[in-house]
Image (cartoon, rainbow over all chains, first blue to last red; front, side, top):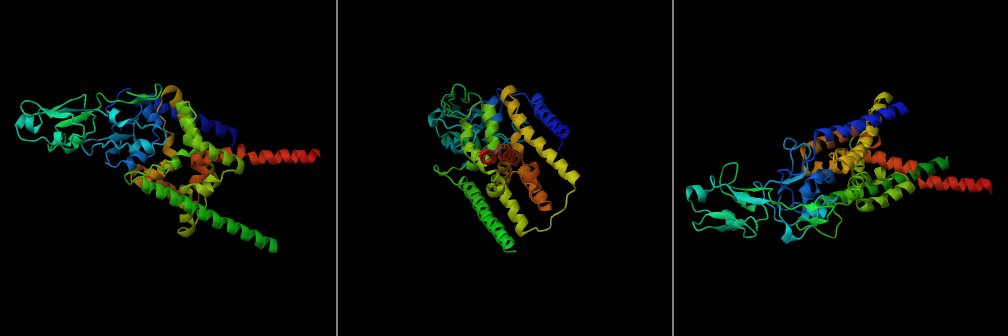
Length: 195
Length: 220
């Protein structure tokens, strides 16, 4: 390889590294539900090397790689799809993450997101049927009954594990109870704190 | 004549030892792979050791995080490569091991590649290697996404065996290319191989020490 070829390769690779960055701007907040102990969203796609260790180790099989159609920047990073499987907060993913994109945090501090009941789809709220599956499956007792025996989420207690969404018996594609990233906690590297 | 036989014997012996070491490395890789799929995971086993000793990922992470804490497990291997040259690709790398075993036992026909194509592939290798480093630098200073992982051999093999389609295709491409021309991925494209070769040849301490010795001898 001569100097000309080397310089051409070098400049082409630098250009190739710049182009995706210009197209894919960092997101401070995304709709992707990350595993517990994940670092802040702006750094996550940089620290995550898509090694697949977390996907493999997940005992609940709740971690799935983000599809390229959903987000190019976050392609192949781990996300929780609660409808398919909820998180059991074993934190195995944080134990095997080689780059520290997912860090081990105290179990009682975990907050992945918050569950919300879609009252128009819920069997109890709309059809006045007897169903409290979400209440039964909630591991932190964040769902309770109101005066009319309808399920209500206590967002302060909810950890966003998604077990309620996974087991919701509503047969449509979307469950009557859904977990979103609102209220999630992230590990902030600079402050070395999970909040 | 006897010298030739002795030399051939030594080469064969070295090859046998190399194959044993490669087989051990492949076994360790798949043993750790299996262990990560069993719950609860054994906390004493270094389940992500192959990713932690990956020098290129470690350097990239050090650039991105602007700290050296993620570099430590890889530094030990880098130091050994500086002393002994790039032994990693031929002795330890499980991807290289799989390629070697496939080429030795299953596919013996090797295609000839014209020097022009070979030169193009080597240029591509330099392009990929500098892309990984540039991607890490831009990720660190301008919050650009880090895309250097795409060509990492451990990322490819791990995800391929997990069963993710794109990575299976990529791994299959590596295997097919290596059947046509043994180790073409390792010697020409793999950015980790490029990195270790650079570290192993340019900074080879052994060479420097031997040069110093030579100078001393000449001066005496």
